[in-house]
Image 1 (cartoon, helix red, strand yellow):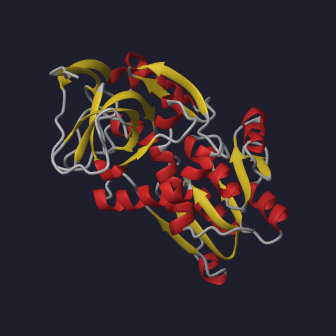
Image 2 (cartoon, helix red, strand yellow):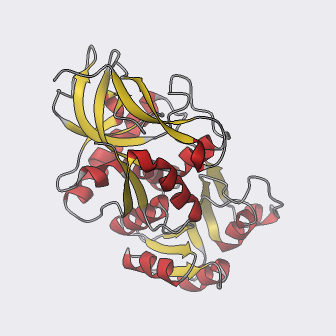
Length: 332
């Protein structure tokens, strides 16, 4: 196919509220050595996109400065020199460092994966950021094993829904926190053994009651006063993995619990990681998780798909926290 020289994209015109996003025209990027060019059918919206739009999350070197978007799915339309796995016409999903809110996006071939059998491109675009994050932080850094108890905060977010499904698929028990009866019911429907309404219930007490000893692993994106409460909820020798700080990254914590329970508190970010590190995560996912997706044992939860031109509405919706699962932009 003959590629156009320009494309539509959504850019952050200045730091601020969702209305700073605007549809713009940009040159179509060209794949370099080892890279592929994907004609984007769908792109996922994620919290880091919100933080970047607010001016609080600079993209890593080499990523588009003002075009957000960390996960895409679509058709490969060009391959750079040395690309071995992919051919023009293949369908792929990919984890990108930025630039996903556009008609075309470049990514290193090792950070792309085939669309799992039976999934739509809308569903495929909702996989990379959340599944890469959950796999790395729950199963690699957090070392969750079958029979252990996972406490996951934000159970109806894209990360939360994915963590519930994958933890259950690998034989763990899950306690999820969520806000309100509808979201609590959604967590249970996804397989959570217990769902706690953080607005009316104490997740520390509920976790200890359900597990008998506390959570072996806590996946936290909240921060703030949850940090100390996570220490309370954790079992002896438990692990806490921090992936975000929606309620603040500064907290006053009694660290005696860290010592007395022999806890491990770690954390990570995904976007700044190297191509090689992301490639290793992609290989692990294809080996361990792709069979689950292809077999229908888990699939991304899609809340809403919006046209690319309505990215502003997508950001407003995410910031409202009304959604259950993923919000996706339809580009093609």
